[in-house]
Image (cartoon, rainbow, N blue to C red; front, side, top):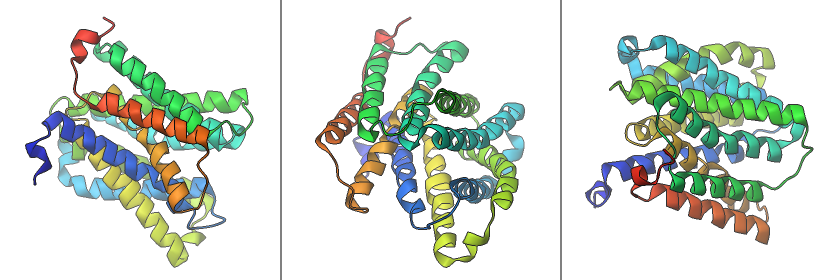
Length: 294
């Protein structure tokens, strides 16, 4: 049965965003397939491969995109987010750095949408987003040292993520192809990250397992994921999409339990349920304009 028969276009596009988040959530487990690789090198390879695939898929459509200056800035943002994130986790630990970077993204996205596009957040979105961030924090735990410099870098990463998401949504909102927009952004980011990849070393790519991991991270968790995310942004408000993307840590946790044999504590299970319930609230249709803060 065609799922679009009983789902509205808006709901189908929200499912595309969730699909992107599911793919992002597999990246951590996939990255563990190669041991001893600099995580910055792994992230750079992921962006280079994924960006080139997205740019190739977009083809000549990139040349006729409007607001190319904004897209160039967004491409720099895609690359800068990776660097901010890894700098943050190196200072304050993976758990705290991830919670702050990923959790602050929807908040900054909602605020930027309100400031730039005059799209006020709804009470339902604000409540569900707050609950989702709380669930994410409980789920990932509090391991690590809460260093101020690490937290500031993670917050900067969240702001940069919000910036390039809003930029993509604004260009797509003009009627531009979402595939071309993602191709331009991530193709540009690939060019920025190529020197980073070469500097951190590419020897691990000579190993078949390393090469397959890089291809999966680039083709699936970047190219396919952002193809779906871009399709979702056609009808899904960017603030809502950013909150739905919080499904990523939930998927990563479930894969850790199922594939890596990790243990899910009762507290983490409660956080997972809170996060999942909040995302359902965001995904379900509702009378959002009547519930706004404006």
